[in-house]
Length: 235
Image (tube, rainbow, N blue to C red; front, side, top):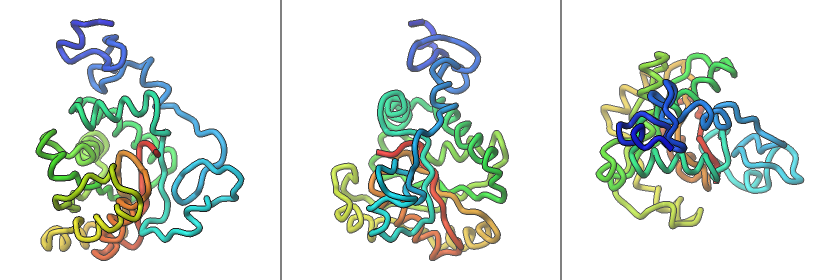
């Protein structure tokens, strides 16, 4: 491991190797390749994106669940290198990784020819915002706008409450009921921005779908015709 590269915030955050890719994206080309060129194996639910075992098109959970969003596309399973990379960005504030995540999203949008996209970052909890000093999903959207001119609307807000990772699906749904909101001024601007746009919510990890569904519901209430989700990993 190249210790000097890590000290001067240039080397790969996983192995320490220093190349021009790691200086910009936080990962060297070798460590980034398995994530950047990851190919899904097997069939996945066309709603939540979970691997299908014996079901056809839609998993059993989604057949009995009504979400506010249409579909969720996730890039990785929340384990191994993907979990480490997301943790370094979300919990350790390694902001270079935000540019790498933006690159992952851009490649997906370009490959799937998704035009007229309006990105919306999932809101950050007040506690997380205070601790890290930035909304990690808003930073990804900002990088996409800066590098590829993809518009985004940072309009969703979240009030203080319990940590969602400690709650089950029903507890999450109840907790989010009055914690997510949109300010009146943001709602007016969003109605204009969302006209004729493919609204896509960006979040880090898809667990139960409660957060994504609640966010999508608010976006629809304020002018979005439909909402799809992009998450980096599914747990």
